[in-house]
Image (tube, rainbow, N blue to C red; front, side, top):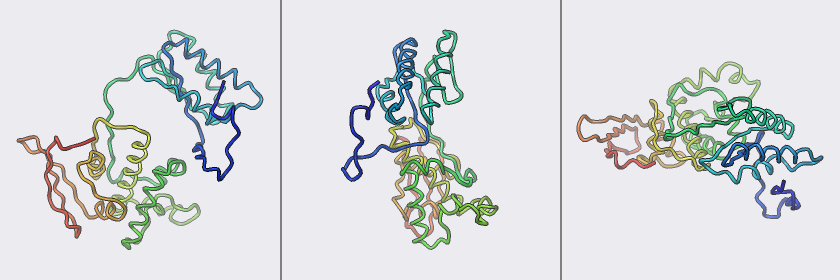
Length: 285
């Protein structure tokens, strides 16, 4: 089975080559017009894995997944090691060999005979949805997530707010805050708003970088602000401007009884923004 690295020498550091982003686990997407085609692909990969030194897991995942085609039979596997991958391949092959199998949705194996239809909507949560170590695993692996928290830290530090969002959300192990204080502290409204808005912004950036576009966006409570921003209705700016906007702005969305317009009533403290109205047609996804 040819892979991205099986016919080349690994690049040396400093050669100007972009190294792959490594994750604790990899996603394998098998697609084919028929189920027997899926089984054949899995059998080929399983045979390749019998080699003494198979290619790295991320190379194999790329090789398998880069030919993904929508609207075909599809099987998804999530594996953390070569042994893990072989075990999941064996389970999936056994289940899919039975024509009566219509769905697999457990243990890192996902298959649905009937494809899901409809459209995609993103729902942004509001305050009180925050919790300690929110998005921590994503933060370790995706710069889009880390960047949003770094931006919020810099903004709160420059504004002299007396707290850093990342320090609240990711308390250092062994400290009093980590032991007991963080859940109570992040429940304070002015801190909860910043944390939730930062997390919402982080997820928006990550989903956008992955090419995921919603057909509609909706927000609950303060999450309305994040939904409006992603839809392109409002643009609060970057860095400190974004956090100031989140802290000092009360956003109310009201649908009037006539005209079907969206009224955005913005009441702010010191940022100069005024009430604005936008028609539904002005919303952009």
